[in-house]
Image (cartoon, rainbow, N blue to C red; front, side, top):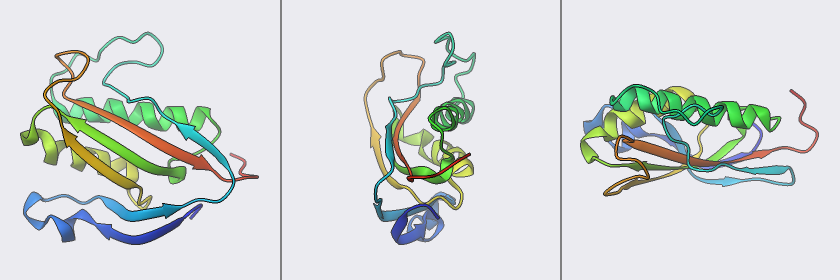
Length: 142
């Protein structure tokens, strides 16, 4: 693994009632490298800023995480370099669906994570926004 992950855990242990399966940790230690600060990603296309045609939290989260993966790869890294995510949702009832979907993209990565329920995002049709930070180790080549 590219970075030192301290106190890794899986949300199935910490939130057994929520049927989640996300690999997270309490802290990530990086050394050197290039830091990639990601803008909050929303369920829209990176190329034309068009929203996807869905009001489903699962489909929106897939698009958000695909954007995160694409941006990290465009910066020269991979998902294993993701060290932190901040998840914003507009309805606590979407939490399980959003986190389950996000978990598909961070399996084995163990980033630190903060989750917030907010009253609204920049557009009323958005249910989820996720920002992230990745650190690409010195000398890493894709």
